[in-house]
Amino acid sequence: MTINIIKCSLEDSRKLQEISYETFNDTFRHQNSPENMNAYLERAFNLEQLEKELSNISSQFFFVYFNHEVAGYLKVNTNDAQTEEMGDESLEIERIYIKNKFQKHGLGKYLLNKAMEIAMDRNKMKIWLGVWEKNENAIAFYKKMGFVQTGAHSFYMGDEEQIDFIMTKTLI
Ligand SMILES: CC(C)(COP(=O)(O)OP(=O)(O)OC[C@H]1O[C@@H](n2cnc3c(N)ncnc32)[C@H](O)[C@@H]1OP(=O)(O)O)[C@@H](O)C(=O)NCCC(=O)NCCS
Image (cartoon, rainbow, N blue to C red; front, side):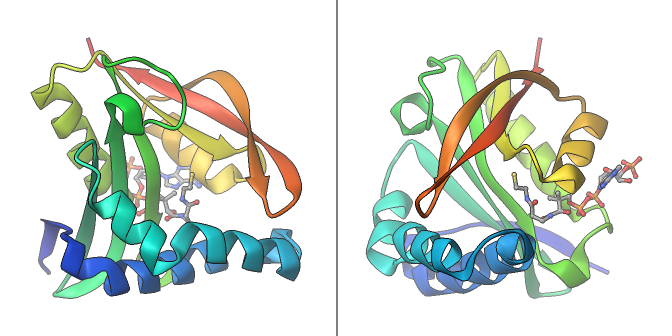
C-alpha cells in the first residue's frame, strides 16, 4: 500500500474537475435538490473557475494517491484567498474530499496533516474551515482531529442559503 500527496498544477484542471464533481455529488446530492446541486457544480467547478483558482498564488491544491489512483484532494488558502477575512495568521482548508471507496482508511487525516504542515511551515497561528451544519460525518471527523466550532457563516447552494459552521484548530 502506498500513499502519496502531489501538488496540483494548472495542467491538472480536468483531473481536478472530475474528482471535484464526483466527490461533491456523492456527498451532497441526497440532501439537496438537483437544480441547486447542478447550479453549484456548474458555478464552482467549471474549468475556467478551477484554472483561476489553480493560478492563485495564495491557494494550493493537492491530490492524494492511494496505490497510484487519485483517492481525494485538498485545497488550502492563505492571505486574501481565504473565503472569510481571517487575517494573514490563518490558513483555510476550503476543500477536503476523499472518494467514497477510500474513506475511513486514514486518507482524510493524511490530507489534514498536510494542511497542518503547510500552516506550521508558514508560521500560521490557526487553521480553519467551513462545514455544512448537516454534514455530520465531516463534523465528527474535524472534532476528532481537534477542531472546535468558533462561528458560522452563510453558504449558497444554488439559491438556497445554508449554514456552515466555522471550525478552528489553534496551532500554538
Ligand atoms: C470527512 C472526510 C474527509 C474524512 O476522511 P476519511 O479518510 O474518511 O477519515 P480518516 O479515515 O482519515 O479518519 C481519521 C480519524 O477520524 C475518525 N473519523 C472519521 N470519520 C469519522 C466519523 N464520522 N465519526 C467519528 N470519527 C471519525 C477516524 O476514526 C479516524 O480516527 P483515528 O485517527 O483514531 O483512527 C471524508 O469522509 C470525506 O471526504 N467525506 C465526504 C466529503 C466531505 O464531507 N468533505 C468535507 C467537506 S467540509
